Amino acid sequence: MTWLDDLPNDYSAFDGLESVTLTPLADGATPISGVQALRHTERQSPLAPLAGPLAMEPREAIFSLFTATLADAIPGCGDTITDAAADIWTITASERLTLGSRWRVTCRRQVA
Image (cartoon, rainbow, N blue to C red; front, side, top):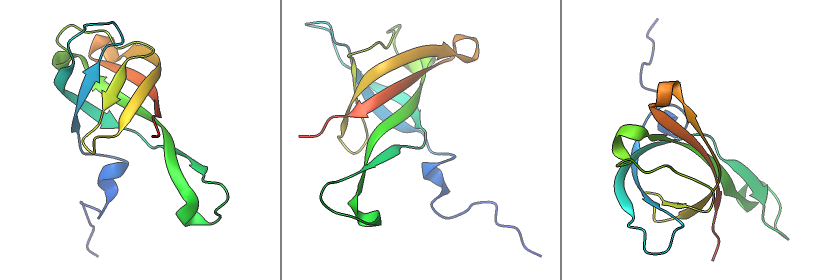
C-alpha cells in the first residue's frame, strides 16, 4: 500500500505560510510587510439571493502571525492585514500564544 505524504490542495488547511502586510490602526503608522502568517480555516456565509455551494464567500479567518516577523508590533483590534491575494482583513480580536512566539488574530474580510 502506498501512502501519500503530500495531499493535493491540503495547503489551505495544514501547511503553507503566506507573507502578509500588517497595517496598524494608528494614524501615520508604518505598514509592516513580510509578516509570516498561517491562515486557518475560514468561516463562510451565503451570498443572498444565491443558493448552493457557489454562493459562499469567506468572511472570517484566523491567522497565526509569527512574532519574529512583526518588528516589535503588537497586532490589535482595528489593525488590518493585507493577504497574498490583496484581500484586506480587519482584526477583531488578538491573543498571544505559544510562549509569545506567535499571535492568533481573528479577522473579518473587508468587502468593497
